[in-house]
Image (spheres, one colour):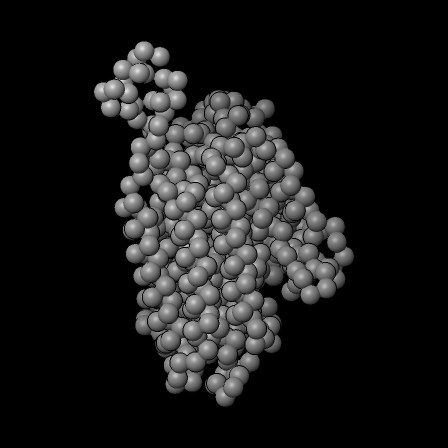
Length: 469
């Protein structure tokens, strides 16, 4: 009886949810203004916007209510930041969809139909539903530790399925990473990364003491024991298999990078990072010399402006670079650029569309929003006490940061181009739903980190009852 009375939670302070609501309204206002600017830029009038804005506002309102009900102590900025990115993605997809339609200037994009924005709103609804389900069913992130090896197996199966299917049911633009049947397609690698993040967190929490043991010392760095290199070599081999059989450089890099960073966080051994980088560079060198599609990415990166490459393998990259250069510092304005000349601008290259029409300032603002999202996730990881939740939140935050770095670095020619989407911004259901699932897990960890401990009851009469019990 005493334990039951002493474990009463303190009343919830509504300040965080009020802050979240204010920031969410600000995000919706920015999305509304962006929609209006895009419409004015295209046709000189505002049309077709109220329904999209209304549906999106309802979805974000439902997400806010779910956080207040199931995660009342969570970070108040995670949801508004995700809502802002998702909303701006809808704006750009609508702007690209309307290009060349109904008298609007531009070239019509073949992959976008008149219902593409509607479909993206529907996928947003699915993503928010998954987000709410995560908050409802997963009361504590550490519950997932029970399913460490189950989710690890699920992640590996999801990665392997496209390689086992015929190319007609799995290949798009040369990358064999899809499951395609009829008019339905899904990219299982988006969900595999999240399942493997849970597996890595559970495995490393259990094995970190062994993996942290030092072996020989070389150049001032304590190297791990040779017998402990097995997990890293297995992860490295798996990433190479993804690259070879699915021709997917992006998923391969994200998969191996996430494991190396998580093992470094778990053990605090710099040697693991050095070993991981060395293996990655060695594997890249081997695959580039053995497989034509990998060498093409490096050729396109190093020599994009040669005549042969500019009209072939580097055409997409060059169009994106020219578009961002045309945008300059402040951009052409939403609806007033020509991003439709870049192939797949609505997907892999959507950042170049923002760079052209919002300029360097707008592109940096988007990166700042992503940076804030990652920072809040890492803050939750630092604050939570449970080791599994701490490692999971850190891994999820890093994979989000790495994904943004890989695609933005690729389209700006900082690094070789890989075929990954920009979270929340790119067209496609798989990426959007997986991004909302990631945010749901981060909010659950954040709630656990910020939730106050139960306080003893101060009422004098009740205290006497507790003592008597």
